[in-house]
Length: 389
Image 1 (cartoon, rainbow, N blue to C red):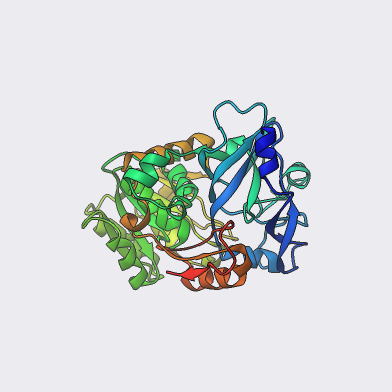
Image 2: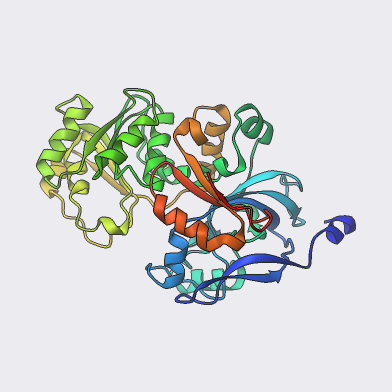
């Protein structure tokens, strides 16, 4: 950072802070971050107001995190300064920040930035000593590996997307990673279940962008219809979850138009789906040589027909998050226009709020959580600038 640039930045900034799990979220003045080797400082322009953040603070999730800390969600911002080893990022560059942290010298040391310290002694130390300040702040020091440059003229100019629309990019990367992990090909039939959540809904977008035929599963018919309506007619079919394993498997095969079954089953079940029958139905609906990818967080064991899986030569793969190249690929899909975002994808930003109005932001996010609705923070907006769209 030049001396002129250094003089232009403030000594402090505003950030949402949690003293410890079980303590409330508060707005505080904290020191302005500086770029160290391997990092950049980013001015946060838009960040996801995830309804999971208040749950984390209240201790209503299984996640652990050292305090005090600033939570992190997926965000878009502009680079302010870079460490001396930055090779491509430069001040002024628009970037998207994703939250899957990995240690450079041991990729098995993993954490979710501002959400989960990974649970192992090494990952807890990694987070405690380096990454307790997340993106729900006016500025953030980010790992270079987690800041991805965006083609601003293309995305915000030619395609007419807002900064808030771009926040969803790392969310799409989760489902896209699962689809890539089991080798989804254009023309194959993919079941996404449940398909009406924030992550699973964007997995439908990823599958359609890859040329797949998609069957969306869910419990609420109205929500499934909303998912279908976001895509051209015929690209997404809906099958409700009834709780009857055999009947739902038969409905999936019928929706695929083939008695042999579907090619791929992608599961992104949240913890609240414990006890649901849809995973067994999805696996039973697979054709000979079919593949299943499990990416959810179900807190239970999976019962499945062992002999049937053997006879049908099934592949059942677990997939946690993604590799860095997956995020880069999703960005390329968006920049090419193959992956629609924003209103063209049926995703509406229903509210934007400054940090000062965090209670209102989280309340609205809880009310609209699921597919197609987003609430975002604009941390550098003026106080009182929050609004519902």
